[in-house]
Image 1: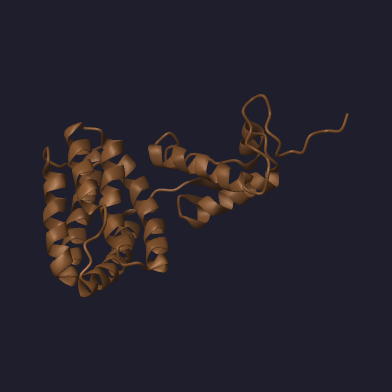
Image 2: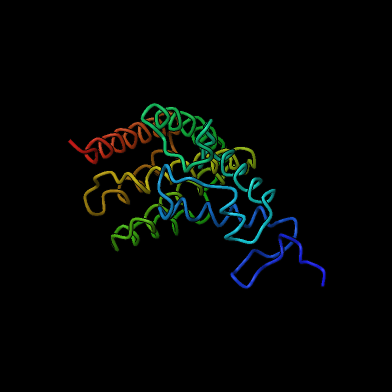
Length: 225
């Protein structure tokens, strides 16, 4: 009897065959990283992914390359690939890039007189998630608010680059929870949206500077000693 191809699904729950197997695998591991199931520093071993998901080593390697390109994982000499986490300097650099992209997107939105579609629903979702004290849901809603603003510019390149940065921010906030009073995050973002649609240059810079300080403070408070 001929042997099945390495990327064929197994009874243990392997991935479906086909050229998208690496994409499906990267999606699965990405979800585990962003949910916190895989903590920063966790090794992502090619051979383990291959065995667990019944895919070829090449497929596992391709999936890891995708996650590394997204900066959700890091390949380090003699240590292999591990789940990433931004240090303080990297956080500041990330926020500077987000500021540039979001400011440009909102400048386009303002100049064209666009009201971002689904923005009101995204803000309501953030309010509901925060009220439920569900931090993963709050992170998802928070990301949706910002993505609604960027997507409204109608620039695929801006949206693509912003989503890449948003994944890194989501990973950081999964493990570093800034101290916000109940309802403060949704109130802050409702005010931010109004200001950003009117004066993006000032509003985005101020908003991201505030969030950077909150994240750094949250990280320092979480450190032992």
